[in-house]
Image (cartoon, rainbow, N blue to C red; front, side, top):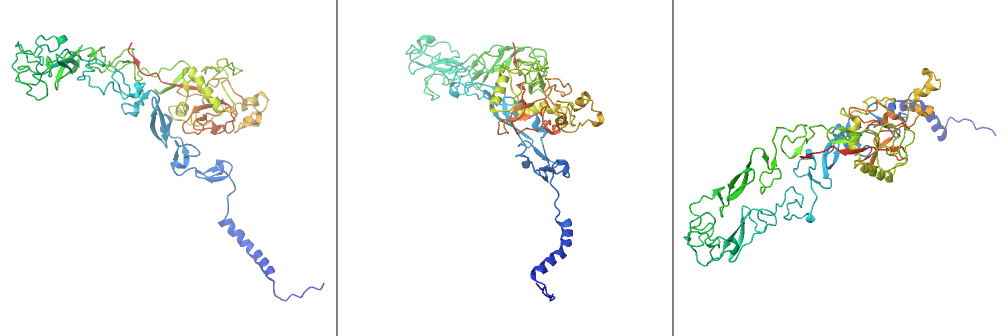
Length: 542
């Protein structure tokens, strides 16, 4: 075939090819400066601070608090583009009440069953213990049936003839009379045309004519000079009418009110106010603890001032050594976290556990050193029920997330139980025994790998008996709350109903997973727990 003679013209295809070749260097230069895409990240260290690595991209973890909700929880706040657990949430708890902490704001929720927030003060939580009775409807029985902080408040014990002075005290009267109650005392009024000449309540108003006698203060017309119902109260010649009790001062405690009640209370001053007897000041050494007037000042106590830790009711409020004056006294196997609650000193173990076997007895949780902790794998709802029951059997309860976090971070709100800087050898983690392995196997220190996840290199990680790592603690005194086994805690913010905290002996990236704020979202792990209990409260005086 004879080739065609070049005519000086180019086809469209040839031209386009030449144009691409001509433009290629410029495209490369433009791409280098204008559309360069950074390579995929694998670790946070691949990104420039404050960005972090998420799904291969360097991003800001957050720009506002709500950005933390999904990955971390409603408690977290956005600080310098990182989601952090705020210290305000660490001790977010209220006695006998639920608590929620949203973006660092702690709020009291509903009261636990049997407790009520009567005083409206969240500071003491739901302070009022009460069991509703009579279907929660107040009846007159000396009890707070509707649990509103008051007893028999719907009944007028001063003036109710069916509950006069006390519940179910029914005033009665004899013939031609009606019973009445005033200042908690029973009286009776005569019908019109009938008179009580003999002052005998058993036969009521026995006479049809008034027999004059010396006038006394009793709500009767003793000297028979009353013209009739002058006060238009439908009662004929009774208290308030002209000629009845004339000359007597009914504002005095000796002759108080319409029927001249003689006010008197045990160990207390008696007063007459607005025509009714009132309890006045208690005598020295006596106190009205039960808030009832009928029995006066019933509580004998010598006040020595503010409450002190001396097994005595110093402030005479009916309680001994209350409000934490003696500190929080926890059982020997627990430690106090502030004055709010007690937490097990050691991770839970079974009653038959030994240093080499975690045992099989699931009857109750123990807190003791030198034995293998109670652990399960995987973590399930069934195990959560077992953990809760084991704590209850020990007279305690499974710890809540907020309690566990407070115990882990300690008084200084640190990142780990032992401080803010990670140290692989303080608590039992996957990397704790790397240098020990090298020593035991003759690997020189210069050749011994002790970096992150070195435990996987030497396969030298294992669970330890409780309390074996003496430095794995803080001022509160728990042991192994970081490392060894994960610890399950109750949570209202996690859809599972629980969270898994603290890290474990076999988990990678221990510097992250041992952080007190870390919550393991997977179930294939070695999960344990520990128990908590409310701090001992007020003790009634013996």
